[in-house]
Image (cartoon, rainbow, N blue to C red; front, side):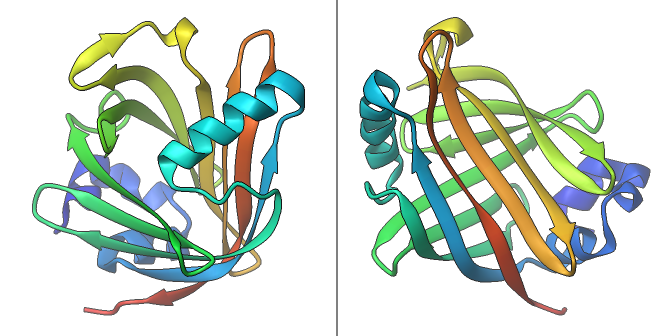
Length: 183
């Protein structure tokens, strides 16, 4: 039994069967995503933040590939935009669903994310941000909204970042075709 199934326990069955399969075995997803940047100041901040994450700076459609794998202690996501812009994250589980959380680490930034399962989808809930291990006040940093769910047999996801008073910084979303690994 892998760490995702262990973290969810008997609630793992609440996920859509295709999400269960993806997180049971890992896999690869590919397709086209749409990147959108906010306007004026929000767009400028969004471009800078997106560059730090490894996203392309141009709005619009981009080829996208993500590889998802497990170790005994982490869930690894390797994302690639347009075969050149790369972004990797390591997710480590803490405690158990529904009160536990995952810590997503990408470079020196870590997000503490709770999970809500709704209609078979996995919705992240931002709880805390740390930079180089130092907790930062949430109100000073972009809030994120993200989910993954199944839509007509495809993996639908959305990630967006915004700041109070200035609005959406950037987002990327799309429908991806799975190529699942079977154990």
